Image 1 (cartoon, rainbow, N blue to C red):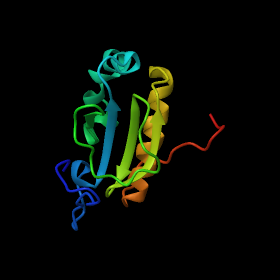
Image 2 (cartoon, rainbow, N blue to C red):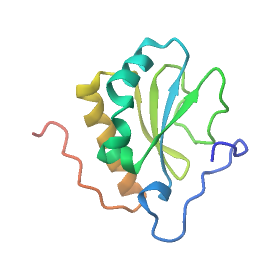
Image 3 (cartoon, helix red, strand yellow):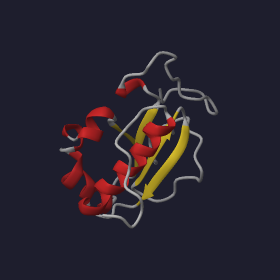
Image 4 (tube, rainbow, N blue to C red):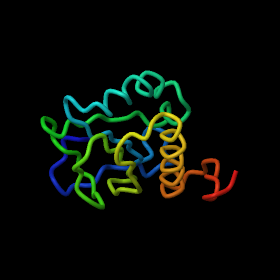
Length: 133
């Protein structure tokens, strides 16, 4: 999907999409030598595919200095690494700039993915309201 021409939207299925073809993408923008990217790799990278959200939505890595940028409609340009963008049908739903450590990362990314799944017409477990336990 990342070989699309600039401005092209990511394709979504017209049938009831499975978790991996529902138009939701999770992209990690990174750079070589980024210490926070390496921290994410050590703490989250190996367990991401084993997690519930990671099994449904693999992370696509984009090196800002080498890789072609995916054709996503971003709210803002990506300047900082790591930046995690969650998008539906090629449009950004939300992002995490920086890596806040594994304790905070999981809650933040799960909330973004739940928002994306609702936007894509799925029915994930509702994210808790801010400030609630």
